[in-house]
Image (cartoon, rainbow, N blue to C red; front, side, top):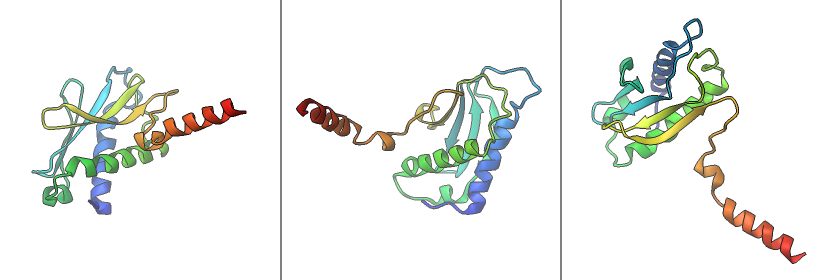
Length: 149
């Protein structure tokens, strides 16, 4: 699934609006997750907090509504993850007054967690599965080489 620049900007604006409710100036808020709920049928993106309070009114993403594949979530997850990482690197979450750590989480229709998209913490890094692929084999090869010497 390929999203237009306009759709990516719409999603980014919605996320900025959602976290904008927690900017400095307010006292620190205890929120452990910000939930992102994409809906393939309607094409909407809902964003809400742990208390199921809607942070952003439903945002319409045209490509989601017209997507007909069975792998919708598998396609949406990396798009949202990359967008959130880019926003974090750009400093979009630095003025947020939510107590760390907090996460951006992808959820389904029943609000069950599908994936953690981004963990916001000062000293913790959430490592993706892609980075860890093959790590066991590399460590085993390294240990074998050390023991042979």
